[in-house]
Image 1: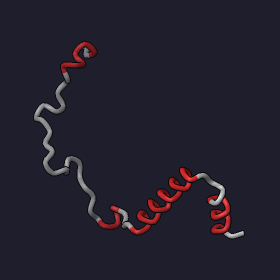
Image 2: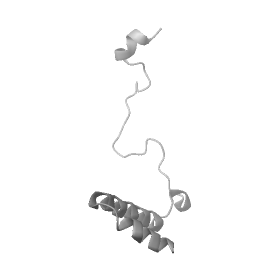
Image 3: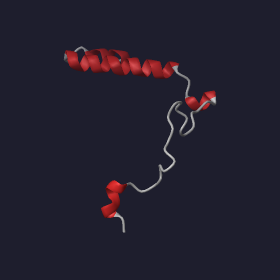
Image 4: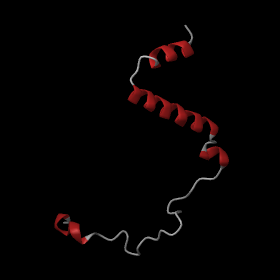
Length: 71
């Protein structure tokens, strides 16, 4: 029995909600196979590269909410 026949046999016995999940997973696998990996394109976003997002100057400063836990 081929893998395709095994899959068809298993899928034909499953309830509708599970079939929907299988379909979504197959769609994901197909889109993943069509996409080029980020490393292959050479374009990877760097940390803090989201446009319009700016961190406060005191981003690393201790938070007052945790003052009671500091030594």
